[in-house]
Image 1 (cartoon, rainbow, N blue to C red):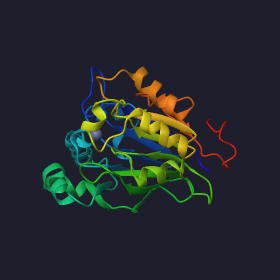
Image 2: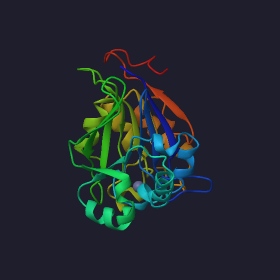
Image 3: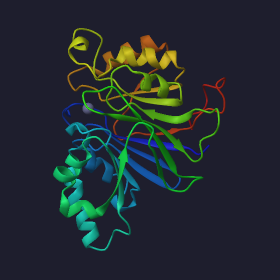
Image 4: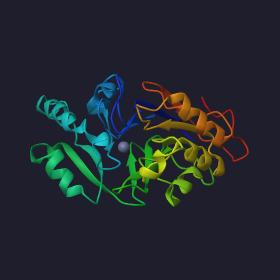
Length: 276
Ligand SMILES: [Zn+2]
């Protein structure tokens, strides 16, 4: 199976801390590049990695500003590139179907809509970018959040029967069946860990604590756990400690600017040595 490269453009929520950025992840295979979420601070980090016209698709997981606010300014960049003759085709923009008309009207706006090819997202939608052998596939799942929120199981190249996908992304969610399903289907889990176990948990439904993420990952045999959507007020060490204890192994913070080369293991028995 082809290698998937995941670059972390932002790892905080629901607002960025000093020098930080909110949700934004560049997912690449040999011939496809997809931006998943576009929160505050993400666009400038994206441009350090890639020229905007080479993006195949932009995915907005849900309509909370910490996941889309930089799209407002990104429109201007695409408009400029298009006016200068630098865009060969519209960029795929995958958006949750519920609320899509609002997003198109208020956020994309009429003057920019021609720059994008809109793909509505529902539970079970499959998005393809690039070619069949070396492109990307994202299978969306509706998660448990205050508004419809879509995580995804991501493949590079052709999915192999019986093998785990290299990556799944939780978007914003509380514990739910979709979370269990994606943890059982992917080698690496990029998981929101907005909370720490403790009093906050009862006050914020639709999010996960680091310990909850660790438990789910352990239960479903996740090979690599990356924490994201971390609250700027929480200590990273504390989130990692909670998640590691529950996971029973090493847990990493999805580090801003870092690229992870992820490859699904060929079988369930081989859970180590698959990172390139
Ligand atoms: Zn969020």
